[in-house]
Image (tube, rainbow, N blue to C red; front, side):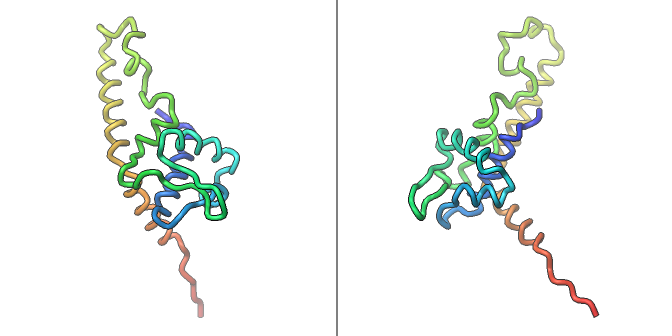
Length: 149
């Protein structure tokens, strides 16, 4: 399984909003700048997240994007599932009626177990935990001044 660019960028944008949670809104151009994503592309990404109720917007001078739920209530799975048609490693796992070999396929259980592992891992990752890690990494990435004698 490989997540699309759209899903990865959605995760980055949501991570930015989670890091800013409780501090007001973030404008689309600011999220795009901070995450190095095209503003036009980010606009397309934010639409399904808004439709699914993960973000909301406010117009006006203090407007922008907000998380619609606390970051503790949003998982990586929620975001990836919103952006992807399917997270299954193979089609037969979520479309069992389509496979003629289902009842005599030794690999079906392998793919089903892999799918369960992927979903379980993505559901265990909360946006709040990733936001804390993001902030910690951003803090350590700030280069300390170097002194030479």
